[in-house]
Length: 291
Image 1 (cartoon, helix red, strand yellow):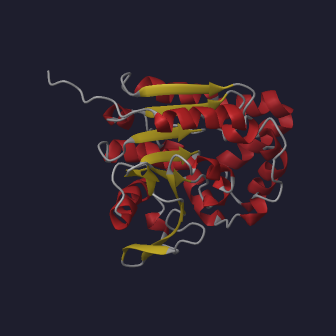
Image 2: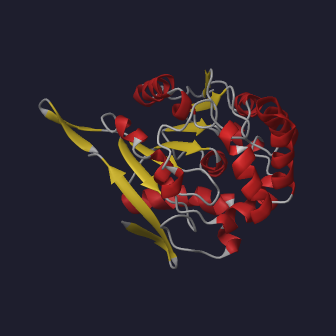
């Protein structure tokens, strides 16, 4: 379905599972898990079908960011983290969702971090998965070199310094195979993605270069799970540790997944989904006592 957020902006939305389910003599409301996909430029399809396994404990909302996938195209001036983060609130208002659990994967994690800063009281919980708070190019290059040698380092450096179709083609061929520690369980998954490469090149040559999402994380007012694969070259472990250190200690939880790369469930699905399930099912924390 398509949900209109404002004139000229509609988001493609797909919902899996009932939100209200029979439970003995009552009807029980499941939490809503809102999934923010990676990119920029990609769509929500990478979450399917693997995230269906959480539909027994949460109603799952998939959507494409504005300008992405099956959502309406918008002017490049709207390809910003502020717009994408505010869309989380707009979409929840349109769907009547209160206190979602928001999961941001990779670029979706950039959006989720900005969402924490701009709307700290909105979510029930936030999951920051395989993401970074800043560019930290030297870390990426070191990881690509460790995993793929000088050729991978050179391809990564060429793309991130000059994002364009030619450098992206080489990056795809040389660097992408090192994103994960196991072959893709579904080799056709990337082919199903609707990709708007213009957003990728604009973001990688613009906002991503100067972003620093760490200061805004101090505003977090709900539990935040930071998930990272220890072999992730594009959002390295140290980036996740920076995020964890910037969050209020009361709210921060950290899950380091060994022998996993970008999108931990792609390499270690049992460990990753066990941790996600545990976090989703954790009871809401007691409110802080007034000083």
